[in-house]
Amino acid sequence: MSFFARIRRTPDPADVAVPVASTEPVASTEPAGTPRRWRRIAAVVTTVVAALLVFAALVAPNRLSRLTPGGFARLPVEALAGVAVLVLLPPRVRRVVAALAGVLLGLLTILKMLDMGFIETLDRTFDPVLDWPLLGDGLNFVQRTYGVPGAVVAVAVAVVVAGSLVALLTGSVLRLTRVAARHRTASLRTAAVLGVAWIALAATGVTLVPLLPLAANSTAALAYDRAGQIRVGLQDKRAFAAEAAVDAYRDTPGDQFLTALRGKDVLVTFVESYGRVAVADPEFAPRITALLAAGTRDLAAAGFGARSAFLTSPTAGGGSWLAHSTLLSGLWIDNQQRYHNLLASDRLTLDGAFKRAGWRTVGVQPAVTRAWPEASFYGYDRLLTAQNLGYRGPLFNFASMPDQYTLSAFQHDERSVPGHAPIMAEMALLSSHSPWAPLPRLVDWNAVGDGTVFDGMPETGEAPNVDRTRVRDAYRQAVEYSLNTLISYVLTYGGDNLVLVFLGDHQPAPIVSGEGAPREVPVTIVAHDPAVLARVAGWGWQDGLAPAPTSPVWRMDTFRDRFLSAFGPPAGPAPAAPVPPSPVPSPSTH
Image (tube, rainbow, N blue to C red; front, side, top):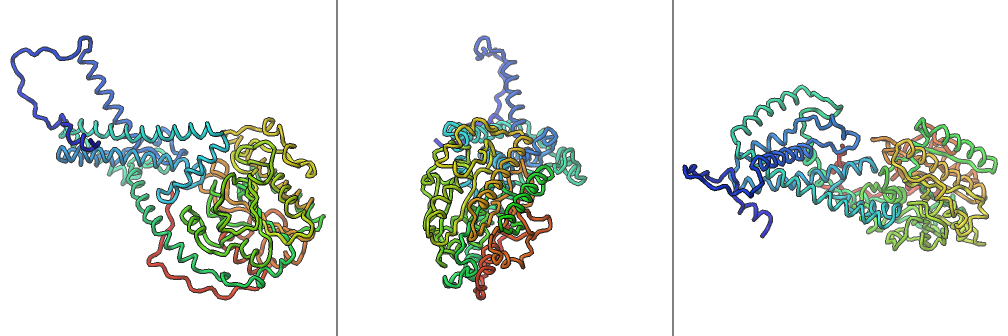
């Protein structure tokens, strides 16, 4: 028998006729030792708990920063409307509607909890259409950071919490509905009085906590917002197809690509979580900009020049692959649906242009620990991952190997090969990936070997932490390590023909960058040949490794075309984009 069938068959005490009391004495049916008073107290307590659960679910915010006692001092209009509607419905319909309302309230509460997690890590709310694959990536992060037992516990807790919430809230709504139906007149009068109070509070905008008015409608607004977000997510596939159909470089012959970089080894290197906050936050900027200034001087003494600016990333806090694919494809990839559609397309990527022009292309992805279907889309001549980079040293939480080892292995396997063809490598550096601890230390490059030189470092380093001050300090140290490693690599192995493009993939999580921080990341081009930097002189980028506060800010998806245009003949006019049937707005965030 189904759940709702049982609801329909269960009589509602409020709708059962009460027989006329008999004058004959009736023997008590209560078990001996079970006073009726205690049963009544238990019933009252259960009802109060049910009311508190429903109230908390209705007024709870979807941000951890607003989860304060004052955030619950609100009057939810959904409760008033629910009482008015439910007590007036026919009994059977009332029970079904109450059960559905309880399930919906449970699901919306789970959605609020997902929002809390997404806002804390990705600085945006959860998208009910596009974000489900990210839950698997989050589980992978937990497994790599805390091991398989930690991942199993995380899944078990999530399942129990989600199931319990839906069950408890459904039961609570059903109980409160029965109570309200038994006291129909009093319930309607109370709802009417509180409804007038709600209207008055809404008209005056009274608040106890900023951005949380006493007249609450947050749960209804959340449901309405996500319904619109679902519509936008479903339409986004069509909008992306229209954008992807336009590519000025699709049919460009290989001999016309990147003519100004012939003979150069070009490294496009993503530094994990290297966001604008690293060079702008007063807590980080003095040390990191001093490091970059010293690096600029050391590189200049070795004959290298550099130019820097900012790019706007499509993501924040995580989702590095979205930033990588945006930069390389020249398309705005800000969700998983777009990412999967890109992988199924024949879009020309930046590394694809290098390959067409005769470069040997290499993907260096130390985070990849299993089969990686993306490799076939990017079309690398060789893919280096955790499986074949040969690392034998200790693991540093999510960063499976130190950045120095990644660069050293790439140098040994590719750039140190005598007479090698020009190489274009797209590389990810992981040491500045959260949780930013423990960290390796820079060692002599000749001692890197198979990575066992790093043995013992994780045990003597800082452990992962959730304290904001310690997390921010760990972030700064991680970025300093990654930047120092890159500078040291160029000074050690650069050579006359190296062109290094390094950039952040996204801002760090809000615990470091703050909620609502701009999604901007530093980007730098380093080259020994002055002719290379002369090609970008018109970009207006800042001299040196550190971008200035007034440096240009480009969207990351514009980089591919600007780069190809600067280092080769400009493309012809792009074909006109198909006009989508209707505009698709971007999903809103709270």
